[in-house]
Image (cartoon, rainbow, N blue to C red):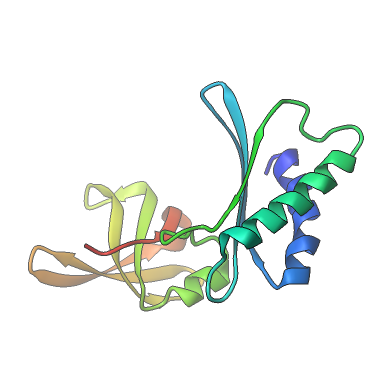
Length: 157
């Protein structure tokens, strides 16, 4: 984890705890010529734009008080909801996603594929099982969790 992400996580956590918000993810990325500091937050029932603006203002004020500046380059601060395709990072995210439709990306291909979508059926420390629809058939596939690069909620079409 980069020092910017660690610093921002430390600064934003008390702000979020006071509001009973959850920190989903912090990322600091360069896209083209610009740097973006993105903070994804959530709560039961979802986050609205006023709550994102509040956290953005509070975080911005705290970042401005640190000397030396933890982020010396110019950047855009974005505070938002993780959206309908929320990433699954923590164990509680996976637990809450049981029975939900998810997307996973793997480090190593299984049956020639590195990406799968299906309903999260079972979960333990080592593995998870997805119910996947292949044409008109449903099939359960089990994946080693250590082979999962990324996971997120998905929208089923």
